[in-house]
Amino acid sequence: MGRTDGSDRRVTAASVDDATATILHVDMDAFFAAVELLDHPELRGKPALVGHPGPRSVVTSATYEARRFGVRSAMPVSQALRLCPQVIILPPHMHKYREYSQKVMRIFSEVTPLVEPLSIDEAFLDVAGARRLLGSPRRIADLIRSRVFDETGLTCSVGAASTKFVAKLASGRAKPDGVLVIPEAEAIGYLRPLPVGALWGVGASTQESLQRLGLRTVGDLADTPLAVLQKTVGVAAGLKLHELAHGRDARSVTPESREKSIGHEMTFDVDVADPDRLRRELLRLANQVGARLRGSGLVGRTVALKLRFSDFRTVTRSRTLAEPTNVGRRIFEEAWQVYEGLELGRTPIRLIGVRLEQLVDAGGGSLSLWDPDEEWRETERTLDAVSARFGRGMIGPASLVRPQREADEAGADGRNPRWISD
Image 1 (cartoon, rainbow, N blue to C red):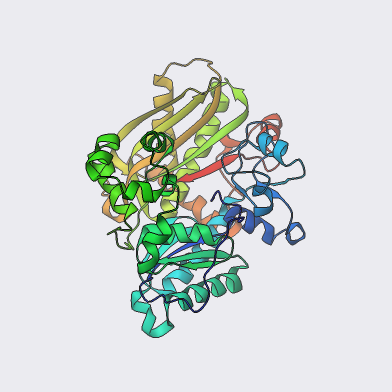
Image 2 (spheres, rainbow, N blue to C red; image 1 turned 45 degrees about the horizontal axis):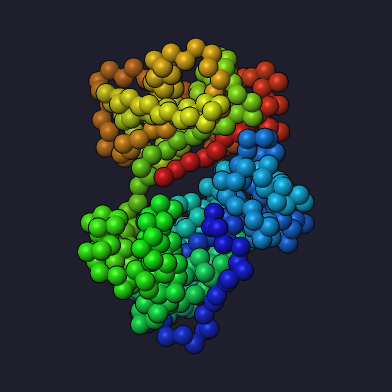
């Protein structure tokens, strides 16, 4: 979710010369919240957020009306309620977001084969080859926005430029529901007044280091000798920032995009010390990871367990498998062995998560002649088929049936997962 509230929105007139702006960055507007509002049209124009009402829930997405009160993603819902007491809380439905993401990405791919997804709700497009058929980049941007709205009911913002970096900056400035075109000749003029924090790779600590040198804008940084920058932030980072400050970004749009890992995690409303409860939740999360892997045609070799304690201390431990897998039960067994190896006893746990890393195509991962997971594999494939027809959650392992008290704690829908992919 972007952090802009739309108050500094800037869009481009239709007459702009956009011949050089053939890289588009398309970003859905308040995506998760917008999808939820499709089922709640009566809430349009009102402050709303996606999350759970529990004391430890965080904001997943927020409408622009809520953002104007200071509500932001990753903010505790309790804090959002203090900033905006009238905000409406909508529970998340990740399967809907995936469904609409697939629809949007399909529209992009029908415009140009050069589509590079960045996340579930944004992508780069190279439309240089589509101009003869569809017109100018600005015209193509308008076409994309029209199709997305007509076919999904959602809005998106588009930045058009000659480089990825400037296109992404432009889409953020055009939000919500706008187009900003920055021709190549105007890129440096657009960049120079921006704060140094607008540059990719400038986090809070780097920004502080640059500001100590008196470098507050991109223009300040562009005018600084490269050697000075490299002495301050390092050789590689200094060169990258120097190039970006001068509007240079040689990266092309790369259609091949693979998730580096797939995982799920859960934050409990109340710290959990019961190993049986933790075991059930870990099995649930591992099954979700396995289902997503199979749905994406992937297998992975490294299982990682993530735990966060009541004092917010976080540990991550992993183990590498002899054979890659997408079987939820295998992922669970390996993660649980990691958990038992930590010898935590009844230490209260605030968050538990599992993810699979080192992903490859399932067709490229060869199984050994003896497959110890064969029975689990066939069972989970059957569950996938049932889920595809009737929806996930209609059937599952009996060990995942929880006491009513636990279901109540997890939320009205019996779940409180946070879907993560990077």
